[in-house]
Length: 273
Image (cartoon, rainbow, N blue to C red):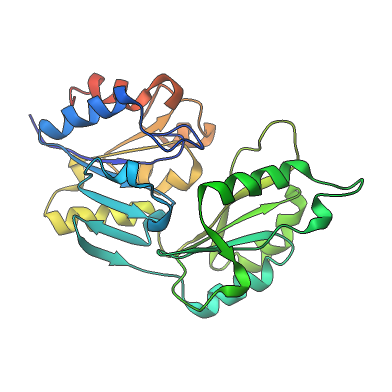
């Protein structure tokens, strides 16, 4: 059996959004693939500090963090490309109308929720709920405590799509905005501000180079548009069912959704597990 390098997104791919534990059936398929000699890599937009111990305890062969800005192979860091500090400052200034997160490898900083968003006729309960969920999952420190350490990705929440128009225009030379699906019937938006000099595709190439493996041995699996370069770069790009329709159009094939244990079904259908 030829050995494959399998790059797996986390949220919406290995885990339903908001979950922290890989389903047992998926774990069994991953174990089988690993026993068959295939190498498994997490390939996520999350920073290192946002990876729960329950997830990393599986023993992945490497981890792509921050959408390709920070890559490890075992204990070795093979790619470390934060956003240049002046560009981070430009982004912060341009995004003042949004709730901003600065994602470093050791800590995340974020804007506190404005009390006006919680009270009165203009209250945005959905924005408050999303912020509460994020704060419960991750230790987000106040953004005014930011100490200048390297930043690898920015993310945002906002009251509506119109709030993104100005920041998008100003930051177009350096970033692209990836807007996630909204929660229920709401105008609230959230997503990532992706530094265009790094991406998950370049991370796949870095891993292949470090291992001396051909790109033809790679498989990439994801669900959203921050997985686009992963899907385009891997020899076999797979989009999760129920994910971004545009990503599915770009992919070589699709598999069932995360709720249907799509990764396990994919590995079994490909004869890898």
